[in-house]
Image (cartoon, rainbow over all chains, first blue to last red; front, side):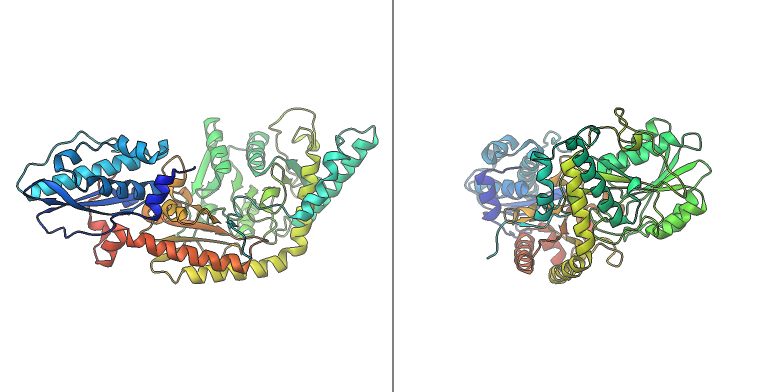
Length: 139
Length: 405
């Protein structure tokens, strides 16, 4: 299985590895996947309340190279986007950008799920209703 | 100078020994006859070469040359041994006993026979990978015709108590088949002392060529027969038709001879390197050896590094070190290793495993490089693992409701 250069670069030099304070009201945390399935992603966003812009994003991922690269890419994409824009990120965007092989599509789905989970966590913390999403493909 | 990449996947296949290639070469270009051609010198030479190789192979396992059936490899040997007994002894019974950690060539063959009216008991293994001999004996029925237990496991290297198993088989008049692919050439195997009736093995796991293997079929006490699974010219005493792969067989013979000659020295040197590798890697936190360390092949270790995922780990160094993982991500099925799961390992640990198979050509320098590369990658990946962070914070990972997918 040959991976794309972009994927390998994200794996070797991952962007935004780390932890934000999850008790902070401006931080949304999405924890998706399961250890039994071989991948767990934790994606965190910091949102500027006034503008609704994501000012920071961090991740930690347990998983294969594609899962790590997808999460790293997600944090890069999220920074500077508004929460509403972030909701439009689709799993296929990861597939295309990283050239994921078919057996790794689930990593992209997990990354999309992580973004949505982080946004919902932020919304709920700030007294907004959680958005209901369609059942994800991986379930 | 250390040459990269380093090969530590000798359980999947071994490089050929140059001495084997040298022995094979004339049989491609000069002595290319068909061993079944009885009427000219080309055939005579080929037959002579096959006879000699048959002796070399037989000698390594303490058998009579007449008891060696050449095959295309261990998968064919497993199929012929098990299906061949099932057909040949159909009047006696239809029950086979095997174990859950067997190779797929055995398990899938047994599943196939279940569809044809066979009954199969799949013995569970203990956490150390060994079967329980009492359970084995208790599973024997009047209709049991075959016990099929592998000699040594391909993923974790555990060595089954074959002599005790054969004593149980003898006591109940049941035949014993063993897939000895990982054992022959690596540890002493003697079909008489160890009480084997049928045994499959292959050349490419012992520094011989791919595409050739052998099935040992006992001729005396008892005389065992297997029904041919391939019809044709009646080669190999009618048990395996098909023109003999003469260069391959010559190579297998040479490989067996070299294993016999070098086994003691190889084992001593390789096990020392294995122990060094294992000891160094076990210095990492939360590292676990999978399977028995007491009953184990001298060149194998299988280690799980908790909270990092196997394929992610491999990616950190797989340009330079060839290894395999029990992680699901290395397979299309997305299921982690069934062998590790059979030991009772949680999926998380099964996903986090690496299998090391050292070999005749492994060097100390390669081991030092490997220890360093793996240790660094494990530490780096744990820094970015949410599970490691939770573990370090003292959070019980089982207390979290994971959205399993």
